[in-house]
Image (cartoon, rainbow, N blue to C red):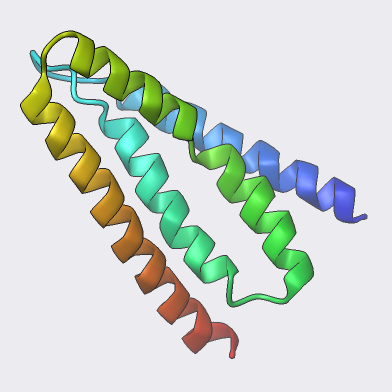
Length: 118
């Protein structure tokens, strides 16, 4: 049963990521990867909430849902492309926004998760 729940959670996370990537393509002259930024900050928030759940659910939802939703490899590739095209300023902005936003979102998610599930 846990494997089925894990697969279902991963399918939902993958679907959410696909949907955001499809409906929020990079925009502007710099082609800012807004969907990837959103999925990673959202994933950090959700993982914070999930960490307030019992251990079994942390794996099912943390690894399944949040793991399928977020993408470190996508971020790495986008940063590489931006740096290769000499977009240093937007690369720095993207990196700082992603890291700071993720840390803040995870903290807020954990706080909310503890309030709701404790």
